[in-house]
Length: 295
Image (cartoon, rainbow, N blue to C red; front, side, top):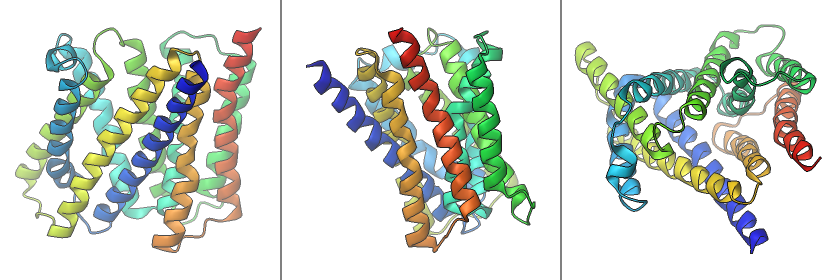
């Protein structure tokens, strides 16, 4: 029975990872049309908010998940989510899709390293090695020769950093809201800020095709986040949360296929080597934790 639960958790995690990768693809489809991030999130996030309300209703009730008991914590997490969303959107406007996703894989690793400073976790020699390998991987992806696209790839790095901050903040304040609650108010703050910026700056409205992609993006993002949360809940009950979380790295091959098929992208060997280093380093963190717990 426990083994079956683990396999179900793997399936939910894989589904969630694919949904999140396709959400980034949908964002790329909008970003390359020149739509401003504020306009994009103003148009897309309301759908996500409505889906989260529905998700809360079928998972214990709206009051359980969406009652704002700690508004300051929700607001701070929302600011991190704005940073992650805007940097990701702008980065996708300029960067090759597959390279952007490669760098975004740093998110979980940065979160583990930030936990040392924010959550006062002990910094081990293994984590120091992971940090070095990750920096080397990013160096290879960005290109040591600092070509013309280097600055734009730093936007992806900023998105990964804000994603890590958001995740660490949730871990630090997990008793102040549910994952659905944190996500809901993060998106609500994002859409509020985006609507204000859009109206003040009077940015042009996206065309019909871009609007459709924006709704797809919002729906896939919610499905992905909900599936990942479901997977982690199932995995936590079996003590396999770390290894199940490794399925998030399925985003890399999916992004490579989409990048090659849709955008004719062919990442350099250096970029692929860098991605491999980041994935290997990320996989070593939960596996190492698992070995330690067995000892």
